[in-house]
Image: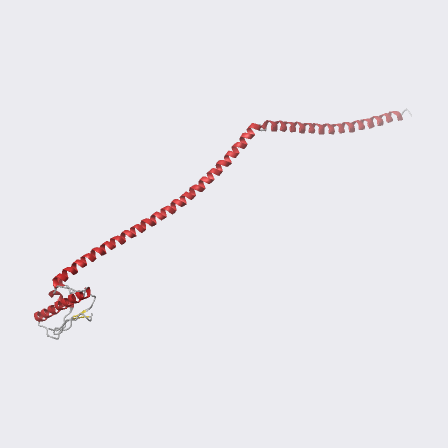
Length: 221
């Protein structure tokens, strides 16, 4: 019996030691978990303090909001100014086009005026020349009668030049001269033309020249 008691004490001591070890281990785990929670709590407190220090005062926030509104207003004004600028640019371009068109029309009108002035001067010169011719040949009556009288005078000139050409060049009565043949025998080496637009036919030396206008007929003398 005495031999068993020491072993029983040893077993009980080992059992108590095991229970104590398990209790210590559990406490260690709980202690480690508690330390981790404490560290996390401290970290949250630090973050909370940092956030509190970063909070913007109400006056500063109001100022920032006002600045933001002012910025939006300025952006809107800039956009409107750009639109007005583009519209003015389009209007200026349109006005410039109209000015260029008006200048072109003015230049065209000036050219027309110059042309009319030139035509008027030519008509005045022609009228003066016609008056001089009428005075020279004693032309009277209507413009048609004056043109017929002048045309007959031209036919007589052509016939006289033709006779002189035939005489100097010993041509037969049936010879027909060319216009270049008679030019040296006419004033300024130029063949006259019908004032009514008729066409002259020189014909042979023995025949009188004719005009395509029916009323412009030179009578045989």
